[in-house]
Image: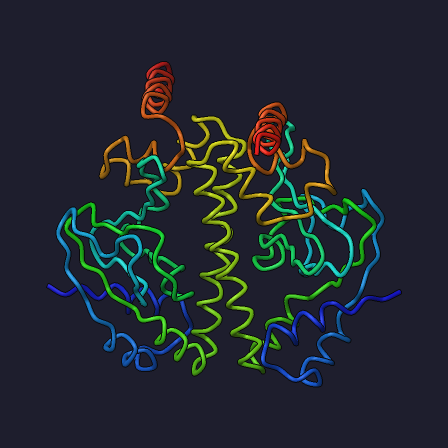
Length: 197
Length: 197
């Protein structure tokens, strides 16, 4: 069944009439991917952002030693994109993979530009998303620079309340920049605290 | 003497006539600060972005243990802002301080919004700056997650070629998320390599 979360997301977050964006939504292709399938691999070219209608994606990069680093998780109602290729037209620097069977909407960058030029409300909203994303990245840098494993973990479950139950613990550790062992210790410590209370 | 780097920066980076942005530039206040002076402190409200005409700023936050963490350096022709307050209207989460006697232009967020609505070229350029900033933050997260002290240092001198000579080594270490001792070791190692060649 085709979900329609994108329309719902846009109309509830923007002061805009459904009819004004109906054509935009209809122009976007919807794609179903199974768990493990890739929407994007490194060094590919791609001109769309993915909006998750259903399921869960992860975006990650692989360093020169072959180690994976999770850049983001994208559950329902999240956008995920490799800006390097989508916006800057260079080969992508990351992988985008389904962690669950998922349904995504493919939003062309050209379409975003076109709509931004036509509808100031859309342009402002898009701008707000960018600013918000920057804010979130700054927070993450602050955490990576200063926070203990425990603080990073608490921040993570605050931002992604249900993802911990949906992905392997090793991926969460990778996102947090800590070892799986360190994550295990933190969880045990917090569980012990809970029991004490 | 009043510098005029902002006008130069905008006209050389946008396909725009000087006359179209003359009023914008003239509306912006210019401020001179001496070394050590703060343009912004934590928990303040502020609605402008700073453009550095001359000198050098740093943006940093202080964690709960009182430790400083450098978020960015801003030499000539860089923009620096605390988005939390400028864009989202909340109290600022960082400090912006002059590391050298500096001259900055104060750009009101309202003015950016106004000009973006009027001039598509300006709006696109502003958008591009946001995307570019996100790209840069992603790179930094990738480095913090995966790179060795040596890789981080090499990336740093690639991005900020002359800043190393202008700021204390401890600040560079703070930006890189490594200890000053580790930075010292890396520099010695690289200097030894240079001598060998």
